[in-house]
Image 1: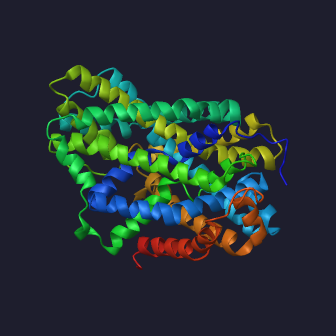
Image 2: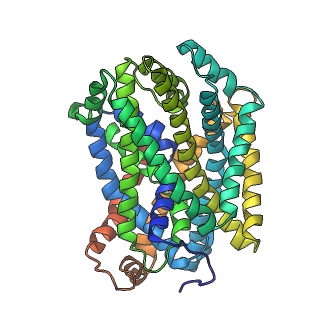
Image 3: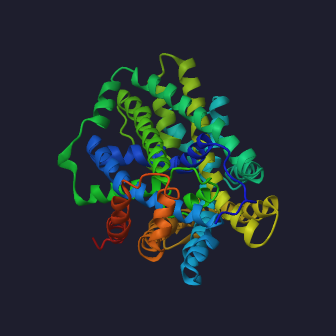
Length: 453
């Protein structure tokens, strides 16, 4: 059943760190804290945890089952398991979505690199207006951000083209612990600031009055994007798992790491923001406008520490972006490498070339070229909307139907219990979630996004 010539992850730790790395990204750092702040702090976090448990983990196991059982790229995996072309469209959609996301994500990743070097050179010193102008001038320049985006894609290309063990696994074993250490250091510095306790309380004291159906759907949506469900990334990584990998246990561990990093990001941002009386906002402005200012004010009494924290923060952002761009790149690299019978380097070169074109256009659409927009949104925002609000939920919805209803149950049981060597204690719960709970919840998110619910 397994293709023995195919590369595999070398160790259990490698599997966990690489797959968790694919889930941990800028979304944990700039989307999660803001959503938590906006939707009632700890109450939102509790809802989010419930969504991860009942929706995220079953969804993740489903993609693992498809990937490991077929041991091939995402597009072929669905065809191989269903013996029909139409189901293969889920895989093709995943590959297509991965390429688009990588294209615009590289732009933001490039901004992180620019800010990392700018913080080393102390270019981010100044009042709030200066920082706002710095970002506006930089992001709308035609050359600099474009060059950084392409540079980031080439760093990603370098790692992916070196293969599973020597490239992705080796890089993940260095980057994930580094990311974690940087986060902890900044969290400690942030939580020891005067007035930081308010920020901690805001994050951990539940305000249940804020819970509305909208907040619940926000938590569902965040759980979804945070675990990179529906993007074919988990399916692709699982195709490199060995037969001994416990899929359920791995899904739980990855979800734990992902959630822990999101909560730590909140602990890094809120205490510092509260200590200087700034309310955190979402998206690019949080990372590139609000936080440089917050760190500067918060550590004004200790400029050296402020400098170190700022440099470490942007190093952390670049690392978080890189663990995600690697997984997006790998989805399409595996596809071209196997479907077109190219070498791995050849496959990854095609992906890098396509994504460079998308990244350049997206970068220019942010301000340098006015014509690159659709429906009143820049090309970058449009691609973000289409992938996050349509393709990802749709991919995950179809995968749940595919695994829950279409694949023979014996295959699902076989994968879930590692060929009967593990107790399938939670199998019935898992199957019920995948057949009924997940599709209903995803349909709810979907309808909510278009204002129907």
